Length: 321
Image 1 (tube, rainbow, N blue to C red):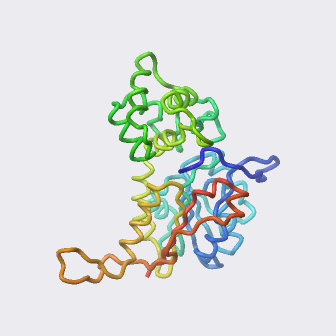
Image 2: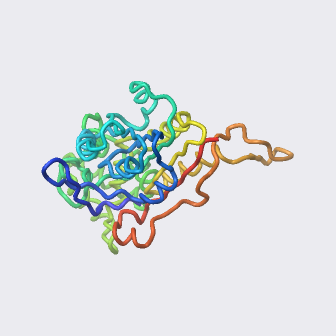
Image 3: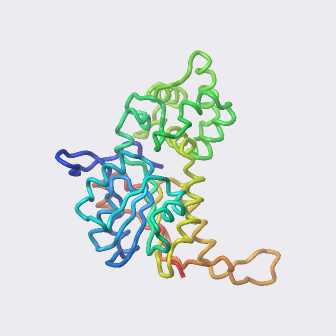
């Protein structure tokens, strides 16, 4: 599951340092995407620009996509010394087709998605991602989005909330938590992060290091930002954009994302498909990839110690054929 407290690095942005999360699995990503002069790589999750910086330093041109204006501003300042090889555009990775069309870009040589949440977003109380700081129960990655986490917990039925907590958070106490939410909101709307965190902790007291609200906040964030739907759209669009020999790398942080990526890559890279009712296996007509990684790559022990956020990261990579 995604850790809700991430270590940060100090990165120069103009005259003053500003915190952004450390990029994970940088060496593995560089080996996977093979950045080089003449190659164009799209980073669909720009964030603080850490991965972009490594790709640019290897000689590639990079387009960074993010729907958070804070991320666009920060990364643009951080990477301005690279000049024209770097471009940033605001939007979601689910809109990559229209965003690249607007830039006049056709085929690309590589694509990267890092599906983690940045420390900058979590550590900004006003964004409402953290259960360790008080703030509005918001969780919108795009501040201009319509639906907030407060909207969900104050308007959905107990059954709908339970379904979100089970599907996106794999929360064992989903029913009890959802029922408690509905009961508490009859007294007054639930509007603050610490208010919701305390409610969850009252239902499932803390045991060990993990805060009992971790899965609940993760599930609500995914629902607010429609992250799984966006991921499905992005996988399709990036795959279509890749040139022959182009590589697609995806970093996931929780089991739902990883299952979706693993299944997508498998169904488009297996040479043969088989069904019980068939007399024998048949060639896979949907095959467009070969797998670069068999099992998902994970962070080294050294990286996990230096950056605890990397402990749950998994990297899967395919190549267009």
